[in-house]
Image (cartoon, rainbow, N blue to C red; front, side, top):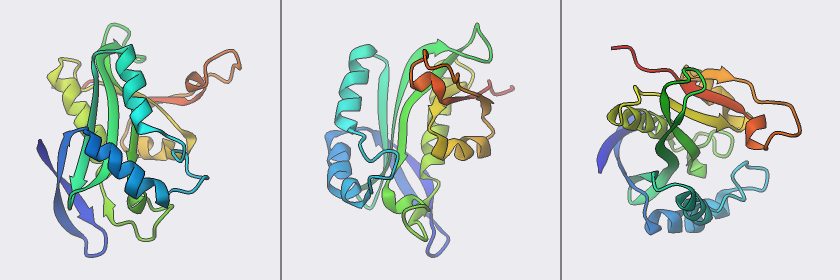
Length: 185
């Protein structure tokens, strides 16, 4: 368990959330608190985190899921593959690959004005980067971004590789790929 700093938007105060391994409690929070606040127009409206956790676990034993809690409520979730997928920017290098990341509906500007907390998504993605450093991958992190959140990854200064418009490619390969290069030492 790790402490992370979030911003309470109402008073601009820093609050301390807890970053911890994903548990059934977090998945229950999604069903109980998140789902009723999501509209069908939200990109993750149909996401089934229980299924995601199960299906990705079948593919790899290196799957990790993490959650940020504040006030005993799940504020954000992330799932990644730490098996060392190949970097798209440096072919001989490895990355932590993020499958899914989401913040609670009340932390999204497009759902709630003003959002309750900021920095949840950034803390989750930066934690993946620290995992990459721990694994000897140099801080490299890769992911395919939904169009609605591409700007978020641009603001994090991730390198952008446009997806393939070819219909023969999988749906995920048509999305824009983002990757952090190794951290210079």
